[in-house]
Structures are given as C-alpha cells and as structure tokens.
Image 1 (tube, rainbow, N blue to C red):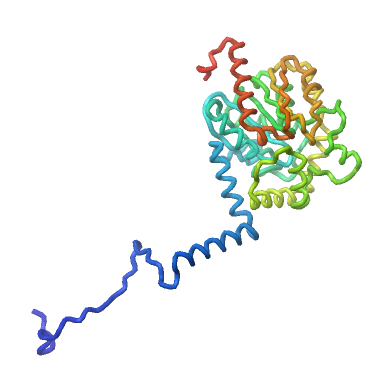
Image 2: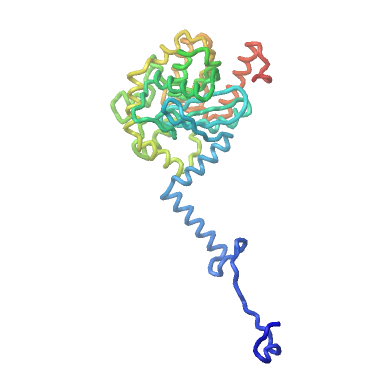
Length: 348
C-alpha cells in the first residue's frame, strides 16, 4: 500500500488537464478557422498558377492522360531512353506526334480508341520526355529507323501505324521501307508534301520571317496555337506556360531539326509513291500549317489510300475533333478487316 502525506486521503482529488497529440488528432488551433485555411489554400493555388506553373501543369497533364486511359512508361532502345504512353487492348496502334509536340497530343482521341486498340505513343527523340544523346539525327529516314528499333525492343512486329504532321511523314518512311510491318497507315495532316502551294505558315518561312514552328517565348506559343486550330481546345494556363517554356529552352535544337526535315529528307511523295499499304488520310480543310491540297497529292501516290477532309478543322484534328477522327479510324479498320476476310469483333 502506497503511503502518502498524513490526511491526504481526505483531500479532494485534483484533476490535472493534459493535452495529448496523437496521429489521429486533427484538431485545428483556435486561430486557424476553416475560412482561414480555405483562404490560405486559395492563395497557394493562385501563387502556383501565376508564378510556378510546373506543378499544376503536371497535374493537368496527368488528368489528361487519365482521361485518355493512358499510362506513362519508359523503355531504353538503341541508346535512347524513350518515354511512352500506353493503354487499351486489342491490335497495336502506334501513334507518332508532330513537330514541337509530344505523345500527349493523342490523349483526347485515345479515350475513344482504347476500347478497340492497344495504343503505344512514344515521345520522339528531341521532344517531350524522351532522353537521348545531344547529336540527334532529325532526318525523317533516320527518325523512322529510330522508331523501328524501339518497336523491335518492345516486341512490335506488325501494327497499325498513325502519325500527325511530322509523325505522319515518319510513318510514311517506315511503311516505305518496312511495308510488311504496317497493317495500315493513319495519316493526320502528314508533313513532307512538296508539290503544293505554301500554307500561310510556310509562306512566312519562305519570306524569311520568323519560323512560327520554332518557339522562342510564350507569345510564340500562343501564336502557334492560333495557326493550329479553328476552335482551339482549352489548355490551362499553367500547362500552356510550361509547354512554351520547355519548347523555348530547346529552340536551337528544334531549328536544327526543322532544317534537317525540310532540306535533308526525301519528300513524302517519294516515300509514298507506289506504296501498297492501306492508308486513311485525314486533313482539316482549314489547316494553316500544311496545305490541305497535300491530301490529294498523297492519295494519288498511294495504291490503297482513302481521304477524309474535315470541314471547320485545323492542323490537329485529333485534338480539335477527337470523337469524329476516332470513329472514322475505327470504321476504316473494321471495313479493312472485313475486306481481308476477318471478323472485326474477334481480331486478336
């Protein structure tokens, strides 16, 4: 029995108030009311939005990829650390982006395609998040070989192959050299067609004004958006600034890439001449980057091409009109499967 001070047993018990903090204690100090916390959160958000676009840009980009049911992955092939977006199930559809773009250009159309195809969209060397040696060979034929080596590395022997702008140009080069590896081409306003008049953008380049495709600052980025679209999709301001800053940091390299593509690469007509691979050519009638007349030029070069001209659409139909573009491609591949004697519903 504990002994205490004599008479202590008759004293009232004193309750000592103690404050304990545990992992489950989420109490808010009296000076931090809910409205104050909301105000602080808003100020932080405004600060990030205005002065630090990168964190919010990453969030918006992640949401866009999630909407397209695509996930980011990396693979090394031929000394290049490729960043790739992948998702969906079905036959493989490889998608190649355009100049000064990245694989995220296919996020919005992918949400309509991943139920039908397994999509693989790489960031091409020199663009996006793909890491590569400084001395990249940007000639279209060299870029095509790089993509084929990546395809070998990930086990793609034969696939549907799509491309936007420069990516469509590269897709033509792959099909010209490796026709047995391409089930069909999906060419979205492909570049490299020489036998047409200058578009408004290339007229500026011909007059030796600034090349709008090579972005030096944020105002150049906004101007390029105006060239690309009739009805621009919403791009959150932090994401737009992030993309503009990333492109501006690579302006010298992108000018070198542009020169190699324009002056040192075979024309698209030469690559496509006599090509027997089935192809769907899609072009916006209001394209200001590349002359829409290029669609008929390419159609005349290829043995099994179909052409779809989209009204009130600019240079990037998969961003401006994603559902229409996706549905046309799905319909085309189903017709192609039927003509080959396959059941489209039971394709591997």
